Picture 1 (cartoon, rainbow, N blue to C red):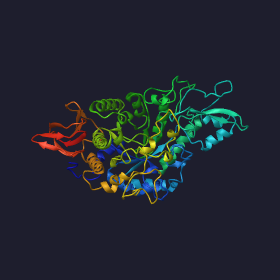
Picture 2 (cartoon, rainbow, N blue to C red):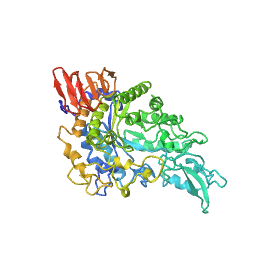
Picture 3 (cartoon, one colour):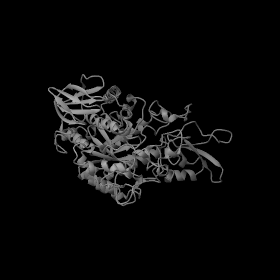
Picture 4 (tube, helix red, strand yellow):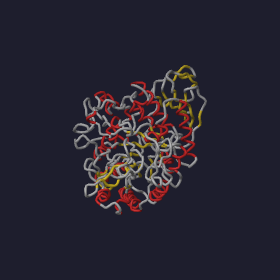
Length: 543
């Protein structure tokens, strides 16, 4: 059984939730722009392609879409190296296309969140080009972190910080006369120099950029590396290598410094000055749920990604621990919890959870669990299709900068960024009139939107049903939940008029029927007053 109800897409019951803050219960769909839909046949997704597919997102039942960067960029890191924050890169269209997309999304009842990248710019940004052209003591360099090197001739980096992508976090410049010059900081690729947020010009510029997009009509910002803009005074050494493994495990002199909160409070005041409940969402890695909650205090940002849930192992016990910690931390500051299973930086959860059919079964169950929990949900494009990670991309097509550097991130981000399959039996599966910038597996023909639409057993229809029910059932979205007694390996909780049961075991369990089944990730068998719940599955009940 995959669905017993056929609720409307946008029931009136949702109106009361919107009055309390639409983001508190929202399902937000992440669009990785270059891999969503291509309108012009160059093999790269674009804004017009997204606009054409907006009815699909409205029909899926999401409340908003979050767009990854589409700004002018040399694309050294998939657009997260921004050269002009007020211009659309020609790869993705024109500024008028962004305006048209926002207007059409609003017409369909969808909100639009855009990425903002404040930790670093592109090395092709006018500011950085001016800094390189200027003498070391010039004001242009104060916008970034330039330092003399250590060693007798300045031949060593200013400190021991490492790039998240691997290698030193410093690159040495060359002066106009050809001699080696100062070093500049880049926590990611060398093409992404870090901004100095102690500089008043930097703060004023980003306030102007935010206003530019708010005036165009966007509904908020996902703040890239929201934990990274402020560095510890003096840029002290860390004293060990493999620093990327420390991210999210401890406070580092370049990440999760307390000074970032002053910036976020200023941005919250700016967001609140606009009508329509504009929001800020933090991409923040913090060592504890309590420190993550600091980013969503009442006078700071509205949401923060729950990476503890994303990285949690499959299993009832670890999942319950993360859920409890997450809810307790956000409750302490009055913020909603967010739940996310995948994004453009991690291996897709279908693959993380196991090989083949096992991974898909667990992913379907995890989707129902996530959509039943209190708070807001993020869905990464393609997870509603049950797409697995593409693990066999040829080296010659890879573009993740971490792939070309050592000792940092694993360099496998390309595998979750392969363009979506929409229709047809051959690549590019309706992605666009041309090819696709990364090759799509032949097996994806069976996973396309066209192939899964109307099939009650498909993952796509499971997501559609779940999101429709989430709008119709008053007990879902933001609010409270209560754990229920359940056997080892099973999670059960209640919400008003609703019960969710997750069997995280590799074998079926038999339980008393708690109510009327409305949705299940796998077929159920009933006998008298009991139900046999299959292995690695989840059930929703109306009570």
